[in-house]
Length: 294
Image (cartoon, rainbow, N blue to C red; front, side, top):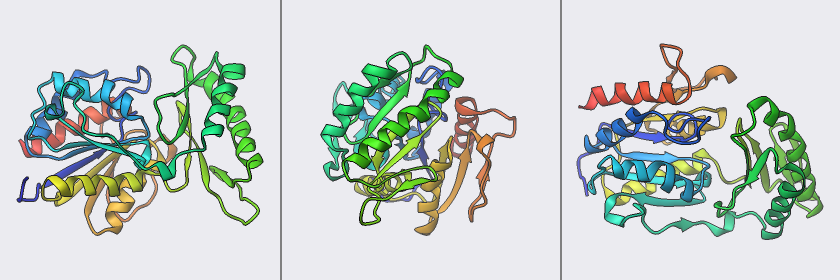
């Protein structure tokens, strides 16, 4: 356990900054190389993602282990926006992950998940797939065989059917600005459309909860960083930096897909100076941080 606070900690979304939104994997070898180098330089890394632990194990952990990630590195995973969490390293065996922790109180109703699975098979199987690796959320993801324009055309159709299904069960549900409370005026579930998927989840889940879980994990293996860099590709990812800022931490947020517009915040926001986006922008920033700590 380290007693000296690291100068820097990284809280990283995965799709976009680390994994290509096209291939859904780490497509740039320098990303894996620099992540491992940063970890070996004493920088804590936490992946804060809506992805499942199975996805992170296959697409992120395995490449890190293959690149030589050491057991003394401080690396953790927060999945499904805070519902699932674990630690990462070779000390946990060939899979590279510790025991998986799940907050079952935040899981979607089993019957709803089954209905959405059936709906995908019956009406949307040529466009999306149901992610059976999720433990708490219900996620439906674009097939890589169709283009973004085609996917975004069918996404709201599926989302509306999902909202109606939750309403039939007596729940309140929200999708972006469309809020449909229950009979008591409450909302329990959120439908979160992204550029490659729809996540259906508890309103408690989010990148802010993921940030809180991240610091709880890091507190178990050493001192907390003095400053933070958070990285994401959507407006919802700003919640990481919002939470850290509200808790009094020094933080800067990196937006690798600023086309949605960069909001005004009380902390610095960075975008690629070269105009790079997604994982190419992520690679640029990882390289710059490695140069600072090396």
